[in-house]
Image (tube, rainbow, N blue to C red; front, side, top):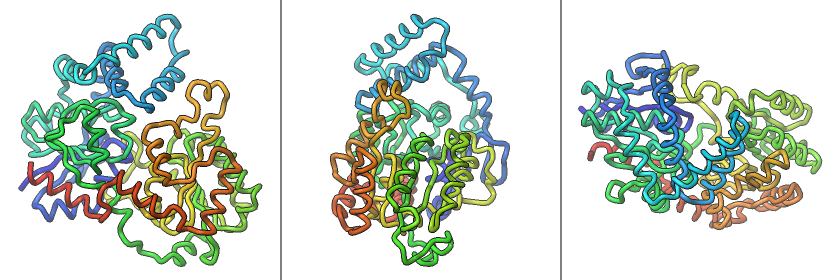
Amino acid sequence: MKRIGILLSGKMSFSALHTDEVIEQARRTGCVVEYLLDSKAEDANHVAFDGGRLRAHLGRSRLYQLLRLIRRFSVHNESMEIKFREFIGENLFAHSSLLGILSGYLAIALAARVPGAGGLCRAAESIFYSSSIFDETAGRGRYDTALLSSVGNFGFEAECLFARECARAGVKTVSVVTNYDNFLNRGAAGFIPTRLGVWSNHMADNAMRAGIPIGRIEVIGAPSLDVLLKPPELSRSDFLRSLGLDPDRKTILYAGGVLIGQSFEVIQAFVKSGMIGKYNFIYRPYPHSKVFSSPVSILIANYLTTYAYTYVSDAETLSNTIDASLGGFELRSGSVVDNKGAQIRYSDVVVNHFSTLGLEACVLDVPVVQVAFDDAMFGVKRSLYPTINANQTHNLVQIKANAAGIARSEEDMIRLVEDYLSDKSIDSELRRSYAEMECGVLDGNSTARMFDLISAV
């Protein structure tokens, strides 16, 4: 019987790996799974690691932090250039010495351009900054295999340290990708897994650019999309009625962005157009603390309740319970219940800010309109990184595939929505080909292939 340790440290890893399907496939292949998380919650299937020790380790040395930053920006594409400008904009005035911080930015930019910089930083981090945070798990023969949701690139520090400790202890590591932009937006790999499961050939190419040898990569599809592809429990009519909406009306799903002020402006554009009150309108706020900490979030919810046929999704609960620490979620309750899949499936058009939800709409063959105007709320921000979402590498792929309508203005957005509402089949073949290019096989069996990959290690 193979024992598998699965580390969870964020929404995407949770939604992909903490599912009933994962438990079922583990049972099918004779495996026992145990989840590691930064939380005090503990039962037969969940154990806690010391998140405080992990954060202290990451902050122990300025050189260590510099190495991780260089590795982050060592993969060169449009996204990394935008992210670097964003990094400068966020930190420029956080230090007393402006000359010193500018010198630091220059050093990072130059070092990241050195050929093989990502691999050199990875090696230096592993040799000089080894950790022992997971000694009670990986280091004592608790697991035969570690399952991780990344290759330890930027934003996946817990996975990176866990995988390195597993490798030192002789534990095999299997990584799967939980979002389509990870290799394009997150820099070079922090560890080389025993095997890596990617969604598609397109993602395999990007994985190699991030430092993963081709011999360790296998295309398995997207496990995080399996639940999306399952038949819904409710019919369209029953689902819309459950939200207080009218099944006889067409439905617009607006998935807001992280800039709450811009979301309000988009909603106002729909009000001015007369669409809100005429069609069903579902507003799904972006599940991020930046959104829910703003008073504008409450203003929007109250504003929409004054119109008929509107529904505001409770994405706040999802965000608050599956945050970076996972500390607020009652793990014993099982998988997270969210009706996002039904919201997408039963809508006639999805309006989005180039988030993963737009790709999911393409997977379900629902028309998508991507907001590509006024991406930042202040002129000075736009000068630093204009239309940041539209210009990121993974979104340029979607734009070039013509899989979505690209709204460069509010007028564009309203016109495109009206076009798709009049004929939902517009761009259907382009959406399908784009979804298959990004996600590989869309048969709902990617989790099963993930466990086949684990069993073969």
